[in-house]
Image (tube, rainbow, N blue to C red; front, side, top):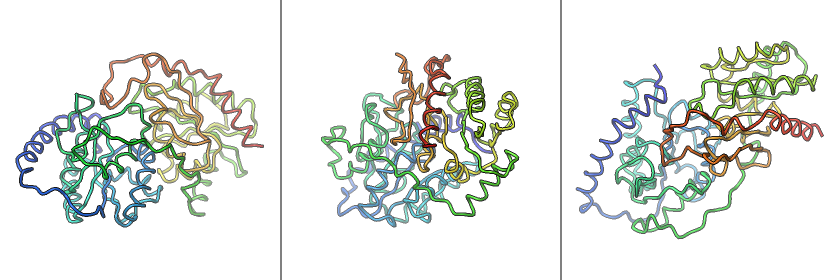
Length: 410
């Protein structure tokens, strides 16, 4: 049975805190006998188990590491189900991706031990923990055997306590875009570790991930075209608008109400006879998405929820014109393809997590209580009323989608 996010968080707290404490005590005990690392950095590991969307935002950091040591000397530790996006980025050799199974509470520990055995055999020079919210990645970064370790440190209680396991201890900066912070973590390897949290440098300007970086094969494209044809019930080419309603979102406060997606779909279908609206979603969302499609009651509105693999979803993005979604993984996945993305932000901010692209269109109401999700509170919120999302109206989103469709038609 696959572990859900709530289970993973409990394990991270119950197991992570005592393990971080024990490993911190061990590190301090043996530190007088450990020689400071010397020589050039030749092998770099990135640790990011979950969060496929933010994995896309690590592209600048990965590019910097590849430029420094070569792609063959860059490794990535990730949950097995999250590796498809890493493979789609095509920056780390597939044989250098070290997967960890999270299918059950019993298999995961053995998978972790096997991954650590492999990593320690590599004699890594550096490891970079890209996680904001978890303690488990700090533990794995330490146990990887890397001589230099870069990651967040809770200097004054800013974020979850992870002990003292890093050599280069960065403070969380809520004013830096996530891709800039990831890039700085690689650059931190050139700084004296005793200087941190002082980091006397400037962030690199944001760089756009090249559209169309993901290039599917002809067979893959035809497979997805067949899925669309079967769902729509017609063989001729269609103009596709995708809606990602996140019917089982892991962070419910990020949801834009289902009724608003229904209204948006009805408007688009009424004014564009050549348009097909397709709802996407995970297999767990199939039933809820089917109810939305049934409510819209149009032969040109279909559900593709649960009908594609993650890689096929990327192919689908390449066939469609516009995606409307809240701030979640699909918004970032789509940045690998030529689709236009309309992203709705609420509890989080595009200043930190927005897609950097000329084809990215962002809505954010900027209420006084938003953003309320950050590394400071570990995504634990007391809010039960997401007015930040409710203030984004159907009228403005509809107008933007129409504008984008018109521009693409031209």
